Amino acid sequence: MFEDPIGRINRNLAAWEEGLQNPQTAQEKVLHVLLKGYSKTDYGRIHRASEITSIGEYRKSFPAVTFADIEPLFVDVRNKGYSGFLDEEPITWVMTRGTTGQSKVFPVTPRHLQDLIRCGSRGVLNFAMQNGGLSFLAGGVLNLQFPSNIRVLRYGGKDVVYGFSSGTYAKLNPMMAGLGLVPRQEEIDALRTDLTTTGWEKRYEFIYQKAKDKELVSIIGVAPVQTGFAKYIKKRHGVYPRDLWKLRVIYSTSVAKIQQNYAPKLRSMYGDVPLVEMYTATEGAFAQQRDELPYVAPNYDVYLFEVETGSGVKMLHEMERGEWGRVIVSTAMLPRYKIGDLIEAMGKNYYRVFGRDRPSVVLEHVLWRLFVGWAF
Image (cartoon, rainbow, N blue to C red; front, side):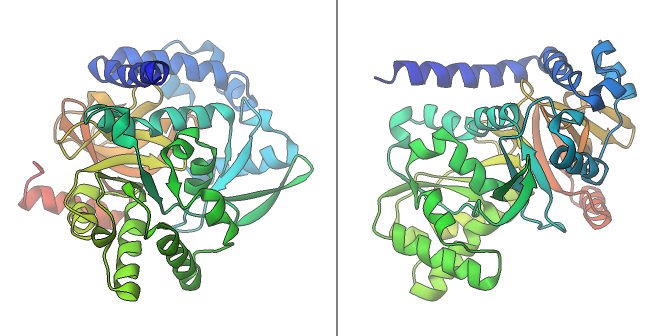
């Protein structure tokens, strides 16, 4: 019964592992694939995507860009058509949480979604295969994702309802449906809530009522939301999640320093179980925890990773242990995108994301390395 699904899972995880064993080869292959897509766009043609044969040439020809640089191009996609910047027509649009400022709005192309689903599943599937196989996944999964129906934009002559990326990806990802989300994403969307205090409480209360009597085995979501839900039900109902469910694992995403700042809190609230970190964002699913070490391992076979360090721009896999820098990622939609995250190499293709690219975070990290050391 599980032969075909298990075969697909094993191939997916093997591709990740092969990339980690030979990142240079994997990254060269990824560049070739990405350039084929970029060359179909006006943006790619301007930067001579079809003429590039090496990562060095790519770096010279394509500038590293921020969201502010490409936001006007996304506006053009909505108003003039997708081919100026994208090689595929968007199937929907999503927004970020806006925790670091104003929410950003991104298109979602078929290839972007395919890559995100493929890589976003690896943390879950890898841990399951290490702990008994697919039977480990049997049971409900607490769904704390954001609603996917917050706003409306105009695209292709039609009004498109869109919302937060986490809820949208949960709704479009067949694996999430197969895991048995409680409540279903469609039920979250039906609440019509926002990110006000009233919206949070309405959503948390609904989730609690839907899930309190169910048999749940795991939770997947944004770390601060996971702690926020636990605090809410403790204050409102006098119980922690650990009092309601016997979870097997916690999958936690989307913020820095999960292992340092969130893992102890989450285990105290949800139970003393393993926590699997996943480095995911609206822009992609970039890395996930590979084993018991509290670090993440990149998806070298799908995304292209560069880092801006004190000694210049280099490939992520070229970083030496203890070296840190600013992530520049290339995806099916985003050539050389400065995502705004700070990352540190822990050796042997293990990394930790330690913060957003702000002067205060950089200063804190420099002082921490100076006085405490970095062998976390």
